[in-house]
Image 1 (cartoon, one colour):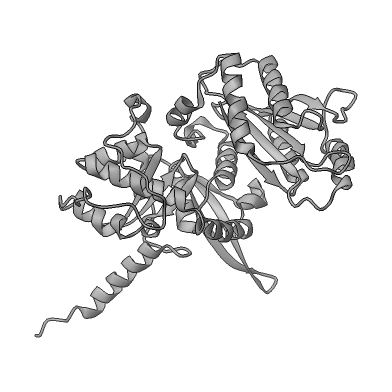
Image 2 (tube, helix red, strand yellow):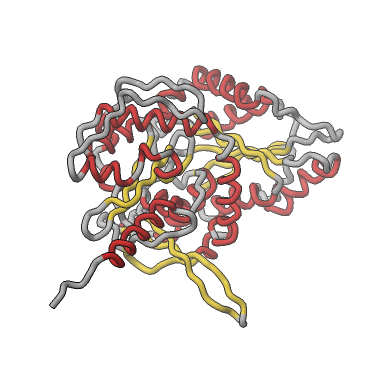
Length: 420
């Protein structure tokens, strides 16, 4: 079982996110402690917020008083509602929140049924529950729960569940709901620093997004529309305005998120070093593009290549599903330039990587001689998603796209007309 913990400032945001699942019949309230309940057994947002108010009012100095936890068993694990309730209670007790008000939601909108728990870190007397060594303590509790309820150990689950969601399938219907579930989860869970990186992430789930610019009442505005893609990367059906899915996946909020992710990425040397080493290790054992993509997926990493109409690779984006990080190759270094992959995949000039060392900016991570062993059947249909779906249109600070366009413009300017 995998636990994810988030701290925030908006209690309303955490509650409304889960309540929306309930209203869409993709979830239900399993358990609530010290939360006001309606006579018909339901829970309404105003009552839930009111239940937490005495705690939040007792201490307004805590910067992020809201805690939002998800407990995620393996999809193959058979967990009853009673099991989920007992797991939630034991988890909250051992983490130090047993005396707090909290509410437990069960989510069924994806194939991985899981629970979300919302509570606050401020006690009724105004003191704050410490988050010291919280991740370590959470992992220890999860190991206990795995043994008690005979669940799949997390180290196996993390390797098996490369993708957190199912791909959007237009033929299955309920397209709006599929798109909503996917874009909300992806925008919330993954780090990306540009619109191009976000589009690369969406492409893995048969989605794309486009910027819409215009003018309303004399004022310019920016917006986003989301579209579903088929297996060929072609749009199907009508696009959806981002406003249908909430502000969290709209233009303004995503711009703020990208700026924040760019700032935090500068200090995250460990993730970059690990990803750097993993990709080089896969290059060293791979024979061709298909083999490279397959081996990379076994490490929980996707590669999305961008190509022009002539088949020229001009950009590549890596998506680390373990650390929920999306990075253009240019952010990792020249070792992963689009030109290098084009030379390898198209011209057969594979780079030599045996003598290379990890970047100085990260911690030393030894290369593995081969990717982790996994059931190859898990990846039989994944290679088709790792394609260049997008036009060479640059967004944000996608450096490879910009450089490619500049090179092409420069070539056009230097072509001389033949003398007659």
